[in-house]
Amino acid sequence: MTVQNPQKYHIVTFGCQMNKADSERMAGVLEDMGYHSTEESEEADLILYNTCSIRDNAEQKVYSYLGRQAKRKRDNPNLTLVVAGCVAQQEGEALLRRVPELDLVMGPQHVNRLGHLLEQVFNGNQVAATEEAYIEEDITTPRRNSSVAAWVNIIYGCNENCTYCIVPSVRGREQSRTPESIRQEIEKLAAQGYKEITLLGQNIDAYGRDLPAGGIGAGVGGKITFTDLLYYVHDIEGIDRIRYATSHPRYFSSRLIKACAELPKICEHFHIPFQSGDNDILKAMARGYTHERYRRIIEDIREIMPDAAITADAIVAFPGETEEQFERTVQLVNDIGFDLVNTAAYSPRPGTPAAVWDDQLSETVKSDRLQRLNHVVNQNAAERSQRYAGRIEEIMIEGTNHKNPLQIMGRTRTNRIAFTENTTGQSLAELIGKTISIKITEVRPFSLTGVIC
Image (tube, rainbow, N blue to C red):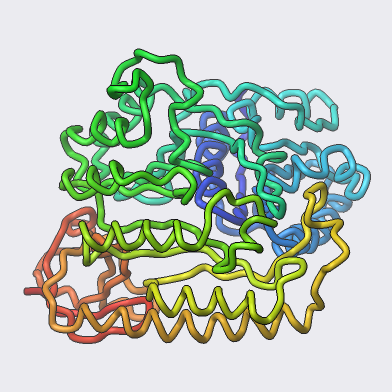
């Protein structure tokens, strides 16, 4: 289906990297239909909110945005309103009842069907597409937000049963893409001039366990694993850097660490959520590992790749968490010294076991513990940054510093943002995607500044 007159779309994305990748794919569908992107929602003929339900505040933000657009639609019935993503999957038709101005509610498993679903909308239907569906191989060309780095989904969904997490119920069961289709997408990206890819999965270490044995890239066990996939795609010409997210401690392997050390394109950055430093809380969360197991993983990484950046996720004030248990999380953060920890106070999510437990903690306790943990995280990040002082680092240029247009911006292999003045004599357009060396002259907890060598 193609729109008859030039029309504009506006996408707002909430949440994780998976959502960002989904938004790029949906933008590609809309542009295939004849829509053009606009940064101004008031100019748009179609507005799409790609939502996140991991935390309550993200969900409430969506409803706030929707309220404003619903009022606008009452004045302009030709405006098309779409809610996609995890809130859409979670709420389904209830969202249509709550916001009757909506035209389409669609879960993450229906991203590739956006064009077909909109056709139903334009035929006069209000549509809710939240039934479980097999995700067809993506034949759409995403509208990438970067000309340098691209997301590549390798596995959808999640089979874990963490008691706090809504992801399995909104993103469905694990579904690995074939190694052939992944390689083809990366080869196409390389041909288009992309230099960096990030392989994505809700639980990336689970890649391949739902695929038949004996396929291309399979390891000695007969089934392809995520580590096997890294070896399989590593030699693609034109791609300079490979990143991936997110790992799960239950399945993280020493073989993966060795692969990252052996394969020169794999960046030295591990993102491995630990969620809590207390074993009883980890058990209540159904995470499937102990803090001792997590510490051994980090020890193994630092033995083989001592300079690698290590980042993580943590939750404070999980139901029943005592002050002593919280302090064990703080101790783990202090002991390990992370480059960054994404922290959150526990937020009850509908349909999850922990949401109905009696021992919920107060908002006051949540806020206090989150603030205290963030203080420790920031201290550690500042200390970890000191190792960059005076060093020569390679950064891949992505754009300019929004706060200082005279500086160009890139990322180190360890995923640290770095800024430098452009003294090359080349324009920004000429530098985008190129790797340059800078000497670090200023370090901050989460970014660096340097001069071109």
